[in-house]
Image (cartoon, rainbow, N blue to C red; front, side, top):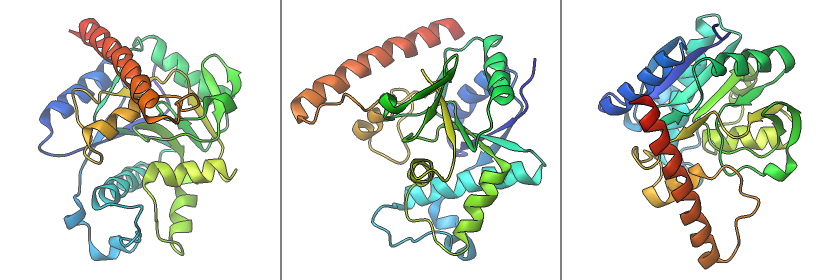
Length: 252
């Protein structure tokens, strides 16, 4: 059984280990894919740089580069005629069986009309979830864009809006704001189908400590007290390490 969408994964030329890891996973899941070689901040053409407010305090050069490469993935999917585009970052792993995965995706396409479908997310407000079926929920505050599907109409909408308003936030924040405002309808799989292997592959955008936040799926119960917060994060890290080890053992 195949899925009605093609994946475009973002990868630096130098990141051979990440490339091997994600392609092994994509091949195992029988997902058609193309690689989007990263264009670094310094390599973005001047004309394309106009899409971003590079003076925004909310956008670092690394975040501008990442956003730009997500846009390149969107545009390639549109150019190839797809109605939906699956975008992935190269540090993801999954525990989902290759027979279960296509059933989950095809059921979502059959039962939902969506602008964004998150196959992975982080720091969401899960208490706001509205259950749809199985492991699918309507969401309003998702973060992270390591694995998600955009409809072609949503891509066109984002790019059209950008003609008059330069991007001022990272790609996940930009999409989240529009989901939260009701402009886009979004759903998530919970627990996520794909998670970031933040232990094996350090973030290219954030430092390692900050990057560990990306393994926290729900932010509802994170205490405000910094000491308690550290304990909470440590517990989550241990849990995710166990999951990562299990995935590694299964896929050896």
